[in-house]
Amino acid sequence: MSPRMPNPSLVVPDVLPPMRALVKAINSVGVPLQTLVLIHLRVSQINGRPVQIPVKKREFEEAGEEDFRLPLVETWREQTCFTDAERSLLALAEAATRISDVRDPVSDEVWDEAARHWDEKQLGAVVLHIGLVNLWNRVNVATKQQPVDWRVNPKEWTPMTTRLAATK
Image 1 (cartoon, one colour):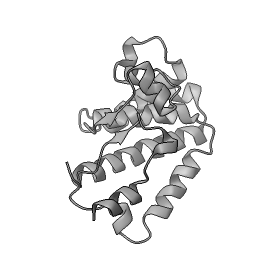
Image 2 (cartoon, rainbow, N blue to C red):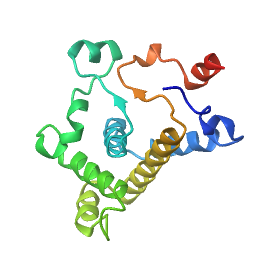
Image 3 (cartoon, rainbow, N blue to C red):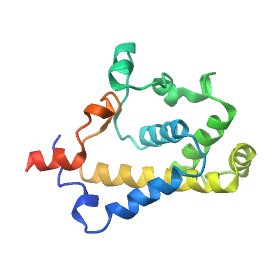
Image 4 (cartoon, helix red, strand yellow):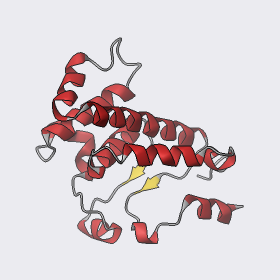
């Protein structure tokens, strides 16, 4: 699949810097990056945005990925390897992403469980993170961008701008 266009965040002037600043702010309030990655993965799964994740031990090693739970995120409710705090945010992420499924998608029960584990600043960051992942998913689906591949070692990752320049 080749993209319909370069990523809009690279085409529309002045869009990427504030989005990067938003990510930086979200990452600065004390929610572990590992937890934000779990949320990103789950939201993308719900949105049908393909994400290539390591499955075999060798793929994890080659990617430099240390969280062996990634292949289990889709079935997190049946797994015992996620903490109660992580579960609360995965439930929040699902509810806030599936907003058309029910009248009150983010129930008080889901919110209150997350609030038991996270303070207001952290919850605010998570809500923004969920929204941002949903935004990126929609932009990438509409423009047919390449899927995220977690199996690629970040040290060997080719930045999107380089990949797009090579396709021109």
